[in-house]
Length: 138
View 1 (cartoon, rainbow, N blue to C red):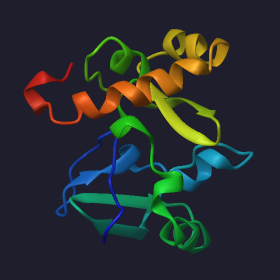
View 2 (tube, one colour):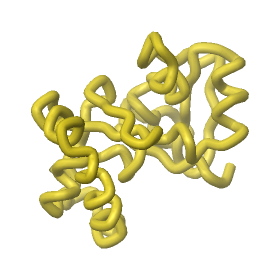
View 3 (spheres, rainbow, N blue to C red):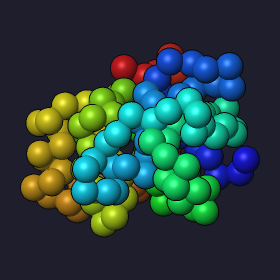
View 4 (spheres, helix red, strand yellow):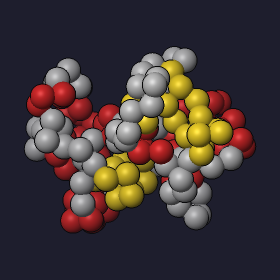
């Protein structure tokens, strides 16, 4: 499936990486926050699998996956600002301009919440880091 890029790696199902370590990406945008996804409501494509808490959330995601997948490949936003690919915790997140960003820790999240303009700076840096190999990650 086109558009199913993904991040915050979890266990590896047969189809590849499990996005957001199995949490439902749509649930991050709902009042209750991140909810565990179920294998029953899984979609796969482009080497990624995504799980959802409900069939309704899966349908919402499939209408426009780019809205719900984490930005910056799911890496820590502050790490991107520092020129590094740093794995993030899928439960440490912020919505900035209706986009999902993940962080390694609460300190990094709080820094971006205090200065949302950092998200745009990280987005500008992201294209130069996208090509780094897994060996360059922290």
